[in-house]
Length: 218
Image (tube, rainbow, N blue to C red; front, side):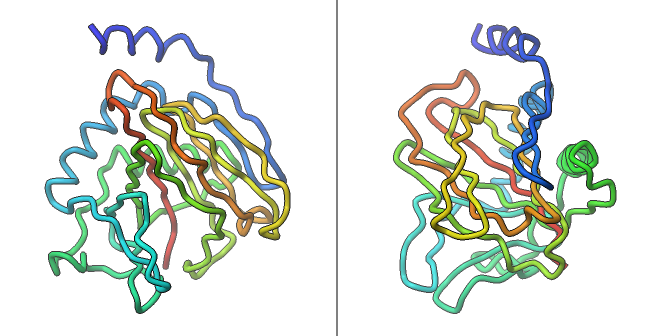
């Protein structure tokens, strides 16, 4: 029953692109018809590389649980932030990026004006009620022109899209499941984050939100 209701919701929204800044686009409903398949793929990936709450170099345990797929994975611990080919928990390579993921990321990047995007890393983040991501920049990648492609799945979240300085006022975007945000080029180092997740329910994920973040790390 809930999946039938969700199918109706998927077809109710009309995809549209909203410019957030020079180089940044909010693709509303871009992935609506792929949400179920993406969540199924995530379930399979988590059996190979389970979610974990990583520790920052300053000793802070992140409220968001995460893992990776692709040739490289982003990790943080007391030694710092970095990309590496092996899962530090298992010592094995990260799971391969599913074709479904790669196709979605490249299609979204092309729609946002980045036709040559070839992601080699996908961060899989899980937010439960109370989890948040403070304003930050993504700058562990080699080419800081290449875009970030961020896909929202599950519970609606408030995405904070700021400016080039941490203190700049941030736009507050209510991202629904299936929304994709892409930023690169002149907007690549914009500060961004996620406000504290509310206690809500989604028919496919319960009180949980997943976020897929695609990057070209190397």
